[in-house]
Length: 326
Image (cartoon, rainbow, N blue to C red; front, side, top):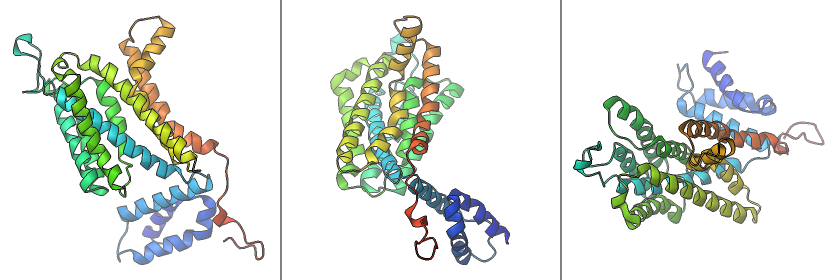
C-alpha cells in the first residue's frame, strides 16, 4: 500500500463502517486513478470531498438528511441578521461624541468597530451579484475583522464596540459561512436589503443620540434582533414542516447559539435575578452566560442527530435473493 493510498483510507474513516466495507476500495481506487503521478498527499479538494461525502452518509444513516439543507437555510438567516446589525452600527459609528466631551474616538468615527461594520457590507453585496465562493470569502473576511477588532483595539489603545455586540456577530458569521450558493434572486437580495434596513432603522430611531449609548442601545437592539430571528426561523420551520420538510427545524437548532448570544443580556439578568435579585446583570454573570451559550449551543445539533431514531441506510440493505448489499 502506497503512502497516498494509506492517507486516502484515513480520510475514508469519515464514512460509516458498513459503507467503508462495501465501497471503500472502489472510492479509494477512483481517487488514486485520478491522482497526479508522484503525489504523496490527497489534494485539499479531495480531502474536503471525502469528508463531505462521509458526513452525508452518516446523516443518511441517522435519518437526518435534511440537516445540511437546514443549516444552509440558517446560514442565510444568519447572514441577513449580521448585515442588518452591521448596517445599523455603521450609521451609529458616524456620530462621534463632541470634542469637548473628552471621550476617545477613532478618527471621525465612534470606535474601531466601523471597520467591521463596513466590511460586512461586502458579503451583503456579493450575495446578490456573486453568490457562492466569493460571498463565503467575503463573510470569512468580515469574520476576521470582527475577531480582530478587540485585539487591535487592546494593542493600539483604540475605542471599540462592547464584546456584547461583537460576540453574537462572530456566531452569526460562522453560521453564515454555510449559506447556499444557489439561491433564488429574492433570497440573494435579502442580506443587502437587511443591511439597508438596519441603516434606515438607526437613522429613523435617532442616530445622533447613540454615540454615548453604544452599550445601552445594544441591550435593547440585540435581544429584539434575536427574537425576530428566532420567530422567522420558527415560522419557516412550521411552514416547511406542513410539507413534511424538516429543514426548518434543523435551521432553528443551528440558530440557537447566535440567538442565545444576541439575548445574553436577558439570560444573564434572569440568572442574576434568581440568585441575587440584582436589577442588572453583573459582568461575571454576563461572561459566564455567554460562555455557557457558546459551549452548549453548538452541541444541540449533534445531540439531536444522536437522539434521532435510526432509520438505517436503505442502500446498505442486503438483497433478499442473493444476500449481497445493494
